[in-house]
Image (cartoon, rainbow, N blue to C red):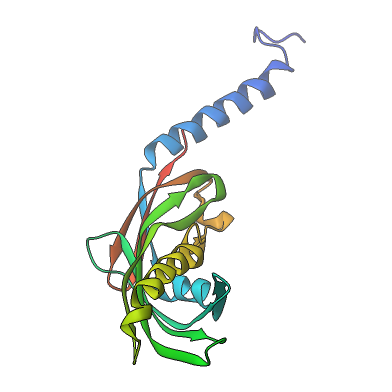
Length: 190
């Protein structure tokens, strides 16, 4: 017996697949941006993996940074880091200990699916008993250390599950900070 249905049996599965695809695409359009909070502790773990950080500068100064403490100053989209620091002049048998404060702008590195730090800068360098004759050189070295330690450092790399939700692919688009969280806005990929 011949069917009065004008469509052949091979076309029906193709039409069903097309309808399912259109339905999923329309669902993706209905899902809007979402904000995900990442605790400061995750960022702290990433920095802790790089410490202690030791470097020799100009063949004379040896600097070691250790014990970092991160903070997210609210409404600034910046990351601040306070760290213990030791500066030594091995040739002269001198060394100083103190603290260093570094900060930078939180940015999204979409090609690497990561949050990174741009424009790191030395906010302060306080060394106990530092001679004035070395202060300018040590400050310049502190700026170099800030850039080497934090420039393009992936503070957090997004996991595949961070980039998918309800079967829809998402992309990070904005960063905001709260005192204990980094808040990333994800939008559906169109």
